[in-house]
Length: 222
Image 1 (cartoon, rainbow, N blue to C red):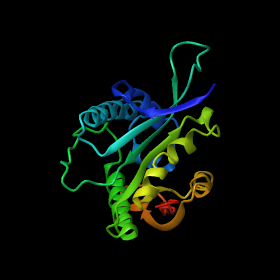
Image 2 (cartoon, rainbow, N blue to C red):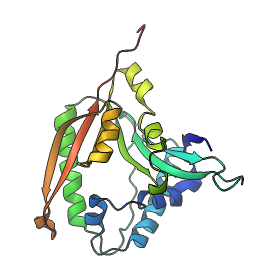
Image 3 (cartoon, one colour):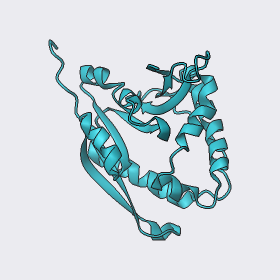
Image 4 (cartoon, rainbow, N blue to C red):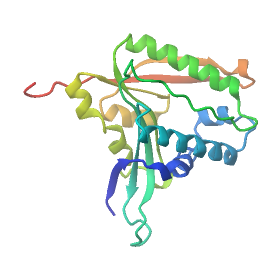
């Protein structure tokens, strides 16, 4: 059946959380600590429901998008969400910056989360140097529906608008060959990386985070 892309609505919080936690990437493994994946999924469901409410009332610069497989369930009236993305639009300096305060699930590795967040913000500042941008904060496809084009639909969503405005599209990802290939296919270039020594937060090894940028393309007739 055909795939369709649209903005998420207020009922989609639990579905987003289920997709978000459907694939255990290294970041999520380090983040979890001793917390259970069920606790994290429940916590994220509440968080995304609150975020979607803010978006509905115009108090957020984020856009949450979903790809559904129309009538996946054998001709029923229900469309099944198979992929989700969170895009952050160029910042409006005059807009309020609402925050959602939620208690994290017990056992979450807060030290790793804080280190990863700080490293990402430092890398972003170094790469973008004050330029306005569209940022892909999250993109996840259910494992059983990968390689069907849903990720590309979500990834390219702001490209036309960004090109018209002369703005870059920016994302951060793990140094993973398969997902990097998808981003490179659509014009993203690896421009920087940061390494977090995991020993300082009770883990082993090094976590590598990569910054990628897609420069705006010239618009014909502009």
